[in-house]
Image (cartoon, rainbow, N blue to C red):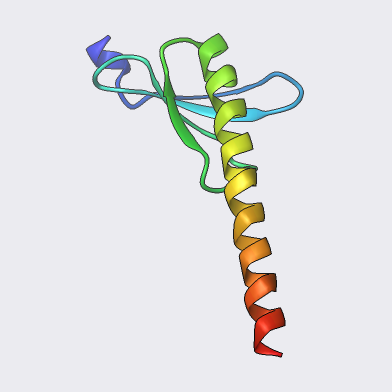
Length: 78
């Protein structure tokens, strides 16, 4: 597997496009080109999609909370 370290694969399930980079410790480092900030790890491609969906949902929640807090701060400032 040492000769695979650093290799990058792009995979899609029709919903998500993922970039899988073979990690030195095994498995993959998973990012999504269309979802800035999404990064996770997985041992298999199936797990990569599961983990990426979970990370995407968490990112959306954090981004929405940030937007809500910014709106509230702007409303108080007016």
